[in-house]
Length: 246
Ligand SMILES: *Cc1c(COP(=O)(O)O)cnc(C)c1O
Image (cartoon, rainbow, N blue to C red; front, side):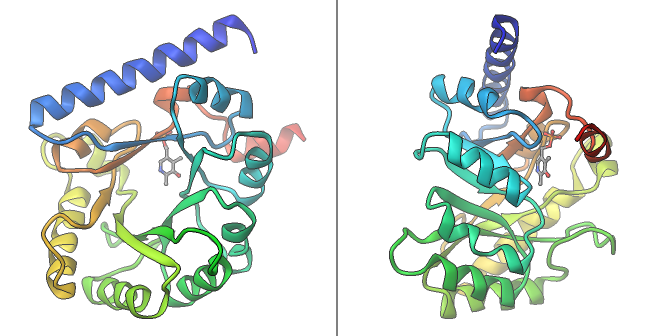
């Protein structure tokens, strides 16, 4: 890796962690976990941040995660943040340091992940992905009742899964308007309702929300887990551009 690329990454990473600290001070919030979203970026980029002490990295594609996990240290804590197909559930057994799946959206996937994870590995942390905007093309569970039902299934029937919170991607419109982001407000409201329903203490579930263009606002609205890609690694090629190359 070139020295320029290395210092570019280090600077961007430091700038993001500094902005997160300042946002927490400004809004009176505790520091969220930072997931560095490394999709389409090479393993050596990840290694550079690893050497600065960063451990949480997010990936969207199964094959890409498999390849990177093989090349990189096994104390990285991988977050799977892409659309997970049921047929690919075995990655949670193949990659023991796949620590979190943030995109759980059905009972049947929960059952498959649970069976694959099994006894030998530590429980897999899961977020239920919520469709907070109600747009039909968005993924995630729609409606509080469906979220409660899935949460109950995880808790009652999936002892190798550990429900840690709710996740949303949110609509781009909301992230570019001033003031409160409605998707983040909905996720907050769902968390309170779910904690109530389960009889769990307030704030025992986390909120995974906020990406490069809206993570500071997400912190203001109580995010406990931000997922930042391009602000750290730079702009990504699109899927089409990647395909065109190979
Ligand atoms: C790609 C991706 C991110 C990071 O997006 P940036 O805008 O580059 O920060 C975060 N969350 C999910 C679910 C993603 O797919």
